[in-house]
Length: 252
Ligand SMILES: NC(=O)C1=CN([C@@H]2O[C@H](COP(=O)(O)OP(=O)(O)OC[C@H]3O[C@@H](n4cnc5c(N)ncnc54)[C@H](OP(=O)(O)O)[C@@H]3O)[C@@H](O)[C@H]2O)C=CC1
Ligand SMILES: N[C@@H](C=O)C(=O)O
Image (cartoon, rainbow, N blue to C red; front, side, top):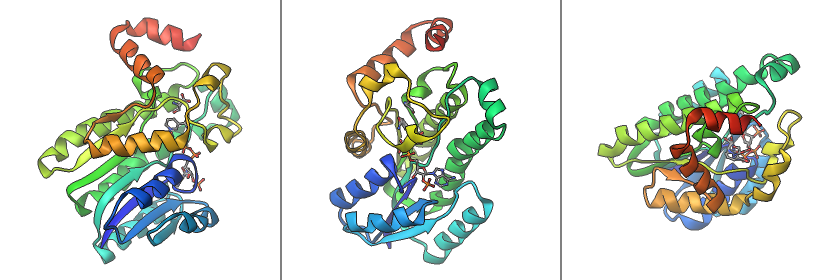
């Protein structure tokens, strides 16, 4: 059975990946869609040409991860694509966020880093030649960001992890792409602790376009998918400017 697996499929870019994978790729038997909001995943069936297998649950929950591993073992699928899109962000200083809720930032690390790693580890034995992994990192991965510190650090983890994993899997011809976009118009900005700052508003990208580029870049076996001219410029600047200056700028 040939499948694609998408985490964070109930909204934003994960949802868009499911829709576009279903339109663009032939030969899949199922797409496995993962998120906590079951009804959203069920509704998504209307937008997919392929049967969706709805795995509703929290990917930071060891019980969910155990059941997921068991399902993989029981069905032994050929996973053609894994999209790790589940993730959250919070902005504010580390101290302010800790005062609001001291679990907020540790739980962000658990979801954005550990759960992404655990999903990848579990799926790895079921990937074969020309399979692909797409990890949602962020432009925030390019440099430390005071006021967005833990989120940016989690995304640096995702970028670094993706690059190294891609190298490890090269011999097996399995390709890994990290998606590093700027702000994208999704529910990411709808939580009480993740407010979009004014200067980012003009740069808000359409999730449809970001995902289309990510799938094209993954098809071209690119290690990074960077959407938009402004984010490409940010990437260059973060390579050439001194780190202390960059952190100062980001903290203004
Ligand atoms: N929007 C942006 O500006 C950018 C976002 N990104 C990254 O892209 C990825 C997708 O974000 P985006 O689509 O924008 O955001 P959304 O908030 O729209 O989507 C996040 C998804 O993650 C799922 N999710 C959250 N927590 C859990 C959990 N514990 N277990 C399982 N699923 C979970 C949510 O589903 P549910 O609540 O149903 O569980 C939802 O489907 C994230 O990793 C984000 O960091 C990168 C660059 C820019
Ligand atoms: N890139 C976005 C999040 O990942 C942002 O800048 O808010």
